[in-house]
Each structure stands twice: as C-alpha cells, then as structure tokens.
View 1 (tube, rainbow, N blue to C red):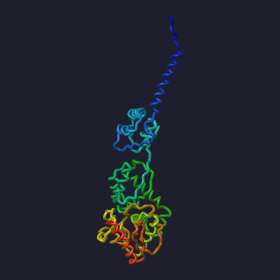
View 2: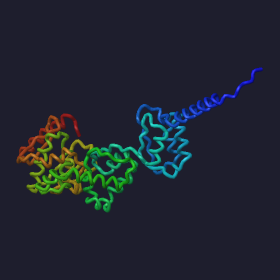
View 3: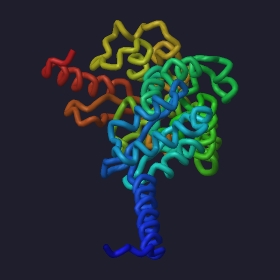
View 4: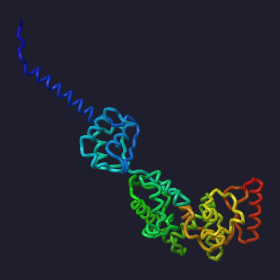
Amino acid sequence: MKKLKFNPRNNLHIAVCGLLVILGLMFYYAFSSVSKSETTQYIYIDEDDTQDSVIAKIQPFANIIGATTLNTLIRHSSYSEYVHTGRYAIEPGDGPITVFRKLKSGRQTSLNLTIPESRTTDRLAAVLANKLMLDSVTIEEALASEEVCEKMGYDTCTILAMFVPNTYDVYWNMSIDDLLERMKKEHDRFWKGDRETKAAQMQLTTIEVCTLASIIDEETSNNAEKPMIAGMYLNRLKEGMPLQADPTIKFALKQFELKRIYNKLLDTNSPYNTYRNEGLPPGPIKIASIKGIDAVLNYVSHEYLYMCAKEDFSGTHNFAKTYQEHLKNAAKYTKALNERGIQ
C-alpha cells in the first residue's frame, strides 16, 4: 500500500479557501441590505422606544440577513443606552453597519414641514402633530399660553401672525421651544426688508397686516382681486368706518361653514365682530397667506368703500363708492342666493 505524503501546500490551500469562505460570509452578512424595499423607508423613534421596539419597527420591511446582523449589532453593543429619538431613513442597499451607525449616533433625516393656513390654533396644532413627534395638546397649550406667546412677542390672539405658510426643513423630534423659535426666525426673515418697509410706510404693524390679510383671504380665493379688497378695507379704516367683514362673524361664532350671514348674526357679542367694533379685530382670523399679505402691502388705491359678492358666484366682487349703489349690488346677490336655495 502506497503511503500518502504530507503536503503543506495542500493544507495551506484548504486554510486559504476556508478563510475566504469565512470572509465571504462575513462580508455577506455585514453588507447585506437591511431593507428588502426598493424605496427609502423611514422609522420614527420616540421617547418611549427601546432597542427591542426599534428592531420591531424595522421588521415590516426587513431583509432577513441584513436585519439579523443589525439585530446582533444592536443587542451586543451599548445601543440600549443611546436610543436617540428621530426620523431615520433606511435607504435601499444600506447595510447593517451603516444603519447601526445612523441609529447609535442619532444621525436622523430631516423632513419638509408645511405650515397650513389654519383658521384656529387647535387646527394648526392637529396638523403639526401629524408631522412631528410633538402631540397636539402640547402645541395647543403653548399657543394658548400668555407667557409663551409673550416670549415670542405676541399674545394668544395674535400668535397666528407669527406663522408664515411656507415649507420648512425641520427635524421630526424638535421640541415645542425649537418649533416656536424656528417659526419666529422664519417670520423675521420673511418680513425683513421690503415687506417691513412697506408696512411701516402704511403705518401698520406686521401683525395688523396679517390680521387684515387673513380677512381678505377669507373673503376670496381670487388672488388677483385681493389688492382691490385690501384697498377698500384700508379706505374704511381711514374713514373710521367698521370693516363689516362677514368672515369675522364666522370666526366669532366658530361656524366657518356658514354660507349666508343673516342680520340676526351681526349682533354677535365678540371683539372679532367687525360690524359692532371699529378697526381691526384683536388678531388674525387665520394664518394669512403670502398672497394675502402681499395684497395688503401692494393694495390698489381707489375710492370704493363697499363690496358685495357677485351674483354669478365667480368668487369676485362688485365694488361701490356709495351705500345706495352697494344696496343694489347686495340685492342682486341676495336674489341669486334665494334662487339657488342657499341658506
């Protein structure tokens, strides 16, 4: 029987192959995508989350191999001591090490926050809470706090004037203080320069401009007509006439669905009732649109003191210089409402 010779080269080849297999497996597990989705997925980590709940939030879109490796990294590290809140993007192809580093370092992804043209602070709070980690109660309580509003330079009636309806890049887990300070900063940036100068020339504060703009926004969605309406209301203010703006009645009653404002509603006891009270109401009746604000700052100069919605329901208005002419326009609109059965 022939005796086999010991060949060191063969053993070396086997060892090298074994090492390559091990390295290959390590590479496969370390760099396999955590997500099986072809689109970016987001996980939202709040203050109540633990390492187990974070892992659970990844499971719905997890790739078994990559997620298993990530699970191992999380459980055999100090991650439980560094669970950072935030919104984290898990991109297609992100491996366990990449995702682990994001989570442990708190390297979250920002989001676009659009400030809506809300009519009330509770509605604004509900929209913001749907986009941020903050709950609506926390936001609403802050906006209803005289102390908080005063710190920002407003009161609870004027705080809506601080919000400019734009889209901002923010972090999901921002605090209520961070949110308000950011909105104040954006407000100041928006007004600085030409807008602030024009308001001063009109002898109006930025809050007064926003208050008038909010009324105009509620009068019409026709942006082209807004400077014309602004001119009419400014004429009334100069003449010392009540604004007599129907949207302020709706706001006072918190009945925004009203289609017609009957005479019995004009005696509503509220500082927002511009039929009973001269001048501007205590604050905006909504977050004024940028178009509305610019309409006030770039108002059309004319002699009209009255306006009434057109009877063709086009969303525009008939303007009048005299009360008698206004009554004729009002009669045409009332007739059109009656014919359509609008109550």
